[in-house]
Image 1: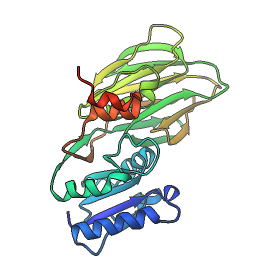
Image 2: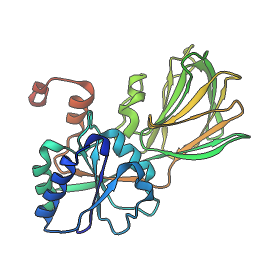
Image 3: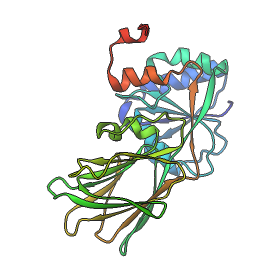
Length: 284
């Protein structure tokens, strides 16, 4: 990996202390002079051609935003270094950067593919296409009444129900909002899609796990009530009454670099389930 790029969330490092430290360590460890630096807020405008590895300095939100914004031609892996709060998607915390760089130089890593969702919003007044690494959420406004949702899977009706909303998640997103709403954990390397209701008014709507190449179409009957579509908890658009939302697997996956000793279940316990550290050495 001769050409290394570093994307930094400037709001997490206002005085550039972390950025300068990381750039220096990469230069010394890999004996390179040029390390390209990018602002994570406008990564879609940057020329990433020739970058062998994109290092993302930030939290989960930074990595999610970059994954959605990357150009279709970008096919190199992302290494997430957590300088934020949660850091579930990151491969390493900033405190362990020296160890991580030695593993990287020694080739003690692997590249994993994470599926993304493609979301088409179609209405008489708006046609928009979006991507999501975690999830797409359809939910009512704060003071709105319940919304009636009708869900089709591969052209066949699955359910019609009233509730506060719906979460359509990838395996990567199964540990996020979907989990909070009662959805299952899905191992991140799988290609599956989950649909989880938010506060359904009846038991007619249950979480369902679908194969990754399913086509999901959703209609929300909300008349004058406010309803919003949110992508990865970051980008939100208002949904008109006569709108269909079509979701499917995006043609392009995101490539993440993880180290050979990466333990998904350990990260799940420590970052999501909040078990004590003693559990790491617990014998079953």
